[in-house]
Amino acid sequence: MSERLLELRLKGKKIVSPGWVLLAAALLAQAQPASSPALRSFDRVLLLEDKAETSAGVSVGDLNGDGLMDIVLGKGRHWPLFNRVLFNDGHGSFLANNLGTSPDRTYSAALADVDGDGHLDIVVSNDAPDRKLVYRNDGKGNFTESGTFGSPNWATRYVTLADLNGDGYPDIVAANRGDYPDLVDGKPGKGTQNPTPSFVCFNDGKGHFPACEALPTESATSIVAADLDGDGALDLFAPHRDGGQSIVLWNDGKGHFPTSTKVGAANAWIRMGAAGDLDGDGQPDLAIIDERLKASFILFNRGKRQFGEPFRLPGPDRPPYCLAIADLNRDKRPDIIVGYVELPGSVFFNTGRGRTFHEVPWNDGKGTVYGLAFADFNGDGWTDIVAARSDAPNGIWFSKKPTGKR
Image (cartoon, rainbow, N blue to C red; front, side, top):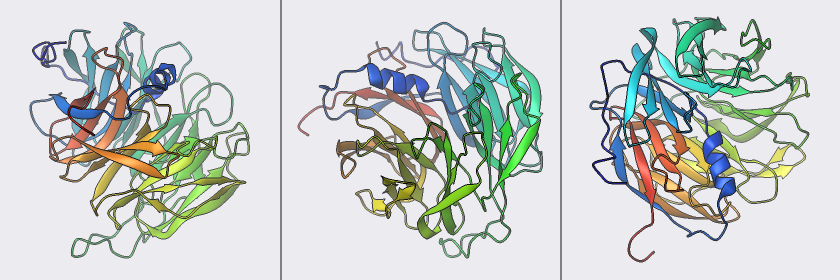
């Protein structure tokens, strides 16, 4: 595909929006051979916008049924903006449109088929005082506001969509941030003053979410859903955002979480976490970033609902702000991708059961990376990185074979 073909042409003035779906990338990774090269580079970029705004979340999925991966951008954290949906035309261009009829304060716009009609819908996690919204997809990429969930007063950051009660429909996990202290001399203060619960909002089977149950979190900006104990039910990992200890909430199989286990450091400042089997033992491990320690870590799953002490990823102190897990080099080992504040990001290629990594940089180091998603956008069989950034334009970083010696 030529460089000219990869130029972004935003057609018309309508612009569109939101979400967090890595399913396509995961399926692609499973289909690739294990004999692929060990490393990839990500130094070719396609910027998705002309200017920098306060973007916070990104999701990918086929929204209009044409077999191509589209992009949804969650925009307007703290200050209202229109979210965007970017439709892939298959020729290196995207048609951008506004989502909804008014701007709002969005951190994430996640994708899932909430009503069982076979089409990806959008769930928008707005911060207070905005309503939390659900948009239905007609199958052609046209979205209509179909309802709300939770309370407009929730300080919701990111939502996770997962079937927690086994009824076949995705439920909403809303991560709510508590009251938090300002930084003092660039360092976090004393931690959450008023603990704030996050919530699970259950799907009624029709794409509505009338009933929500509180989770015993204190302050969370992301919550990870994964079967962490191998019992077939999705558990929840809630990283502590503001100076406390993170918890794993154990699913009783019916979508309720009567028991929990504290994990990681007692005084953590974790904006985002992710789950994946990094050491190849068949049990999902947890990867986290810690703002206070300026580093990324792994909590290895030891089984029997126990996790090890934080294992630090290599590299100097850097302010991390976003993290995800995906297999970017088709070797069937999950890799860890980190975005920073005003620094180039890191792809930590997993080179040996989650204990050794080879770091490769990506992005230009501008702005703050808030959200990550993955898909093969140029049809070369390799997974690319798409990032939502604040104070820098959003973009796609294309995977390619590195030149020169490793």
